[in-house]
Length: 105
Image (cartoon, rainbow, N blue to C red; front, side, top):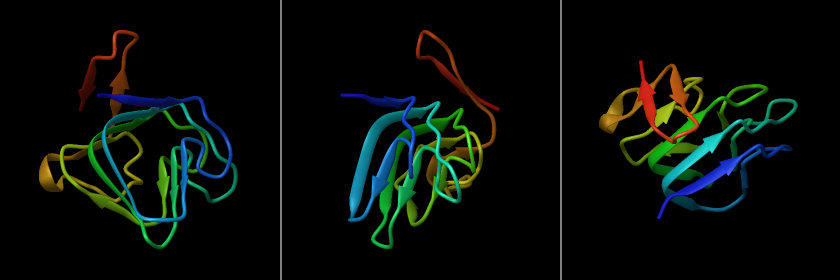
């Protein structure tokens, strides 16, 4: 199953986490947040672990803030989710089309 969270707003527009959370097979697109919160994901001390996640086109201070762990095979358009290129992940430009295909450069 694939989860898409789009157009959310607030402190962690797509997800505001205060516990331990694992997320697999999802897309966070066009979310927003004011201040220093991650526009797509704002995670507390316990953290979020991503696996097979796309985070792109967020409006505000970057895609992520807080404790984010790389479970592998993720893309992050703003390079703010702390994943870099480890475990098959990519940071940089991510384009999501209307047909849900993705490419990363």
